Image (cartoon, rainbow, N blue to C red; front, side, top):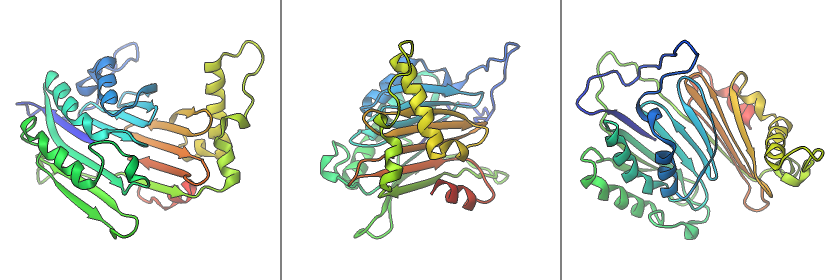
Length: 288
C-alpha cells in the first residue's frame, strides 16, 4: 500500500471527485495514469491486468495474480504465488513524480511463505526484502521505514514494513483500517465449487469463450455465496482454468477482494477489505 501527496502543495489529498453532467467522474491524481503505466507497474511484479470496475472513488483491477486498487492518492497492490511485488517501488516513485506526486506512506506486509524456496529476488527472505527497500533511499529520500515481525517465528507469523512520513494534525480523525482473513485446508466439497470443469463449458454455439468465463465466474460466486458478503457492491469475479477464483468488489470508497486456490495439499482462501464497520464479527463469520 503506497500513499502519495502533491509535491510542494497543501491541497487536500482526500478530496473526492466530482461528476460532470454526463455522470462521468473527473479523474485526478493516480487515476489519471494511462493504462500503459499501470501495465508497467504490474509487469515489475510479474502479473497482468485481466479486468476492471470503477466508481467515482476508485478503480479495481483483477490481476492474473490477485488485485490492484487505484485511488486518487493511494495504490493498493496485492499479489500471490512467486510474484516480485517490491520491484514495483521504483516504478511507482517514478510514475508518481511524473504527475507531481511524492510518496507519503508505504506499507508492505505478508505472512511467512509456505514455499520460501520458490520465491524470486528480492523475496528470498524478509531480511533481503528490507535490504531491497532500503536500497531505494537514493530514489526517494522519504522511504526510510522499519521492519517488524508479528507472532512466533517458529510458527505462522506476519512481516510488516512501514515507512510513515504522513503530515498529521491534532484535529485528524484517522480511521483507516484493513481486515485481512487467511484460511487454509478447504473442505473438498467446497473446493470443487472453484474447479472450472464443474460448470457447463459452453451454452450453445453462440456463447463465446469470454462469455462462458464470465458466466462461470458468476456461477462460482453465487454457488459459494460470495456475492452475499458484499451486498450492494459492484462485483468483478474471475474463474480460472483449471481451477482458482478471484473477486474484487467496490462500494463507495471501500474495496473487498477474495482469492481462492482450491488444490488439495495447498488450498488457500483470502478475504480483504478496507470497509469501515463498527462491528466486524458478522462479516468475519460470514466469510468463514
